[in-house]
Length: 237
Image (cartoon, rainbow, N blue to C red; front, side):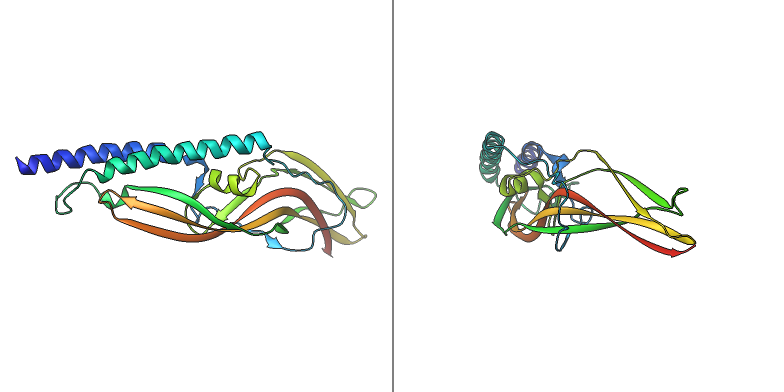
């Protein structure tokens, strides 16, 4: 009978934990694995001129609503964690579940650094000897995507609420550029994506089904795309 009560307690907590995870990670499409989202902009001196196409900046109302949503989500999670802690589980119970993999977590931004400009070199986008006038044309349909990376798994909405622009925002933009190609040469055109960047430090509090708690500390970079810079070079044809 005692063993049955333990098993019932375990199954109840498993169901509860599943419910917690589904509510805590309501934005699973915005949470990334650091091994997947490892792209990072290099700090540099941005080119003079050019149109600033930056997008995704939150209005005061959008920022207020996002912070309200995150606070409501955290309250739901806190209530569920409290219920979990009221159900003691014997670690010696043998189950088919890898219960240490069922983890609830809460994300926190500890600090956000000042904004700076950084770029990601996308490399060559066009090559050729040019038209009859020796002009090589490049047309790029740029994704114009904001982004972020982190050394630990971390939720995008929490980063967005801390830097003031959506790190998942993107829109398409067709950009053209051309250069002259000397006779007998092969022309090449490449481009760089430029971003307004912020470095941040963060931590994630975790608790597994056995109520073991630990904290992961990390850091990352948030990026707001704003400019496409083209450059060219020639080689012997």
